[in-house]
Length: 321
Image 1: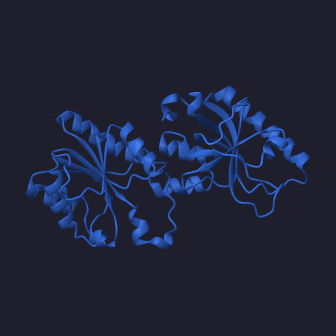
Image 2: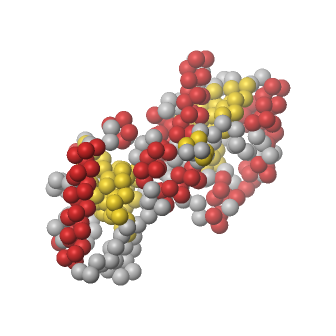
Image 3: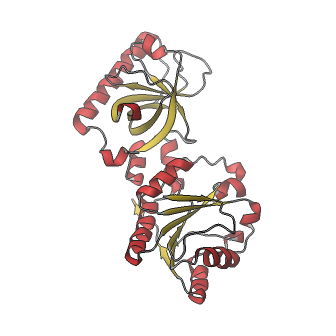
């Protein structure tokens, strides 16, 4: 997949393609449906499938006080879109000047003059342009005049509610990782590098890898059944992960992500890993002593072993890079 980041006006952009527009944070099932429709239509017309998105996320420019935390990193989003069949990802730089561009000008000067699409597909609730006045209807009027079609795609519902990145962020932030799995059609994951910690897990009898997470959004503090992809070993391992501040051992300690990888003794210091969250086991707790803490960790590990004995590791298609 070709990635064009904030292309200059003189840049060569794919022409006569099927263009889909969105922020695509998380690439959830609703996004997947939208993009899959564009990719299928592009294959039918033997045209490029183009995803148009914005960097940074518009909310960070228009509402910086919101403290928005994104589900996916920029690289993860690109990878997921590529897996769906997108041939070109166009990332437009978003700032206040861009936000002030009238919707009609954006449709004519960028979409039409620079991309010359055969068709544009976007969510029926997507808004663009100054004051968010552009929508499917206004774009359809421009498209009819200039010769490209516009398709509005209704939100995908789950449990009677629309699947959205906002909903997904809420589920993850509350630790409901199984719910997130359903909305994503894959386990929620984070990427990061292993760093050398204080070896407290080893002292307690349960050595861990400490992950310096690249993602902004983490599940709520607690203990989770997880799986970790270690590329240098070319496989995914079962694991148990704690997110939190280790309150039994420390006071006012920084948040860490520590994974005990079951039946694993390799040294992966400084290596990149991908950590998949499969099920929440419990809240992070303060124990009266390290003895009680070790006993609980042992129970967590046994629960995880039972889970993997019954469920196995996630299917390779769900976790492959």
